[in-house]
Image (cartoon, rainbow, N blue to C red):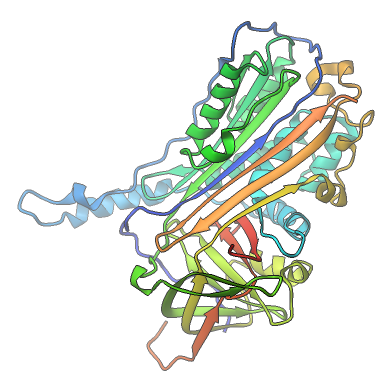
Length: 468
């Protein structure tokens, strides 16, 4: 049975719980350079610009539509709900969606690979936006390699794509939250090309700050900005975040996403069980359980089910077949085809699914340089080849990205899921009722997951090789 459309979901607001948050921070650190343009400000970091982010219509709260006599005003609620529905983010057009889909197809098998035993987590949307901002600061072959990977012809096309990503993913209506924010942090001892900053402010809603790099007050302001944008979900990771005194420019991009399960797991059914990790060792952890009518999807090397989220997206749970490792599955082209199919998959059966899912809190850490070089982005990592001339003209000679680290965390429980990610890139010089088949879907060994937005595109992907 092919699933052509997702089951309609209730428009009434369920309890607000759980969440998904993503942080992508790109830190560009370099030796002291002089840039043409605006003079520097003294003291610790000061704001040079602010931006107005999109506003969305609040989700109608049931409590606001009870009349004095205690009856519910269905007409007023329906009108408010219609206004909220009309305000939902527009989806990307087919060409824009294809650009991101192509990036996901190329990058997930490479950037989600690990050592085969540890967990990995990767946010395609975060990395896409980080590389897009990086492309704005480069030129020549360096920039072209980034544009090729991002699937766009030029900067104007990239800016159109970035606008579409904002439009499709930015929402804050009281039911769901998907918030993007960007900022630039500039060394007070250098001047800079204002037109580049203006372009980033216009096309990426990027605020600009300038101050004393390496000063604790500047570092605290940076940490506070990130924590504010991500609702403190990454406070543990940002506690040690600081810019060195040699930093010339820091680009920071954040993604905060929050949604509850459409239907919570019954906490009374949570019970300890055994998970066999990638090394064949038994681990005891709590498993979430539910039995519900759902669709089971099959690929040549995997089976999968979706756990819906209230925002219209969901979490795909993808179990490799016996004898297939998670890394081997990442090499199967059918996997990314499935992730982008949004449920439109030929080999699928509607059944009574008995889902058993370990409560997990997984983290991943990877240096993306090797993966990006495999994907054709090489010049930005080569001293004497990388071209950062849009920022500093001929003074960019010798600059290169020496490190591009992507860290992420995803955890789930009965109520929902929470996730966070950051990347640091350092630039240096030198259903009808019927009798249904009953299927047990038990994730008691390594598996993959993907968290999607309402458009069905993966925001987070991950491998759970161990629950320890």
